[in-house]
Length: 256
Image (cartoon, rainbow, N blue to C red):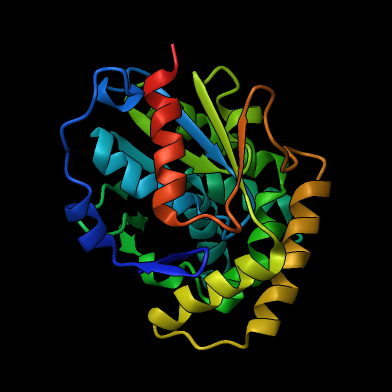
């Protein structure tokens, strides 16, 4: 389930309801998207994953959520009891870890394995939430992940989600989008998302952690969070999920 602007959508139902319909030839959506890569950035819980998954199904593209990759490295570091202040150990872990991203089926979400272990259900755990910024801000960790992300993008027909895709990973992406929303709205979305996954956490606690994460992401020296040059910025506070998908879809088919 995904919620934007006070309206809730069932992912599977929305996928079915958004089947192709006859459209005017003057409508940009009547033409297929030809861009090789769509970069979607934005802060946590701004809607990147929901929009990226639905758009990938509509366009027939693959989707890569780079945040899952950083969360997986964080999970592995915690699982091994690494000192998160030991940057050398974190870089060695990021460079050696085997990450497998599986594409979602209809109505599903992508899954991730690290060193052969499916950790998808662990990636939103509170201890991962609290520590992922500490791990992802390490320059060597980011370099290791960026190399893998660029390799995936080179295959084309891909939507990549993250916080520095348009600014660092793929600065030449033909379409760059930045999704934003206020912190209270994003905290409410994340609270609902976690509750639906069986994780019950106080919304105030989520908001405090989200604001701390925003500050760290925006002020970090390596790859700070910000809209890329030439990016289309969309404030999703008052928009439905379908509205946002529509805007990005139209931009994708109108791009040269």
